[in-house]
Length: 327
Image 1: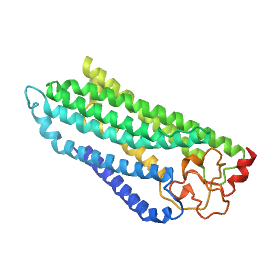
Image 2: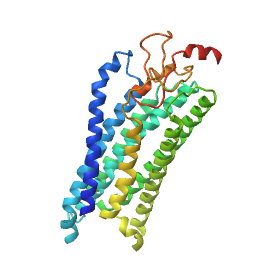
Image 3: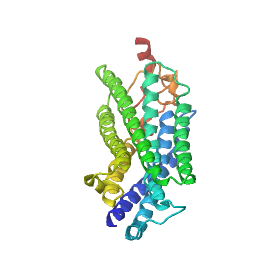
């Protein structure tokens, strides 16, 4: 199907761009590490997002390729049976849904970073945030894998489809709500900094606000649609919705709108760019970030590290001690 071919080309282009960014990030890592004692949370967040996004898009590219190769053969004859079950339908469900988990994990990196910035900005120590993030992702993957194997062993493969769609839908909605919440909190915090004259360059607030509104809107639509598909798979899929259910057109719309486009938006925000300091923020309560903001006690110490060197969103100030004393 030519729509799958278009998807493959677009995802391959994105994979190449991410690979180029990963190589650029690697070449600048050793230069950055000389400026700071430990990698900043911004650098670690951007690294994790780049790697997860690359894995997710490569996995989606492979899944689309398999769907493209097998679409006409499977559509041309009735489903084959494995112990009186539809094994290929179960397999196609895995191809369509498992890469979604990888993309959701990459989006959750943004949530983790924004939550870290927000809570440290309001003087709340969150030492277990990363642990909670890792455990949550592991639980989701284990739940998905164990359930898929369980339905395979019990010969209830068709029952796995609505279950997987429902789980994916719930996860999309949760991620979209989290993105919206923490994005709005960070935007509000930056707005207060703007009113106090701490934002110098870069339209940071508009960038964060665009990401906060646009991505959650796409993700919540995808989540709602997945839940609807899960319900209709049980009660019977209406004719007017069959065009978006397990069809090249439906897959293309979902893949491009909720995986390719959000990945591009977040990737642009995490783009490797070196520039002079652009945003000044008081560092009181932000030293816990270990490099997100300048935590040096010496105003002219050369170890100050600008976050824009790794992600051009937030910049430290060179005289944050003076600002801290005013608070």
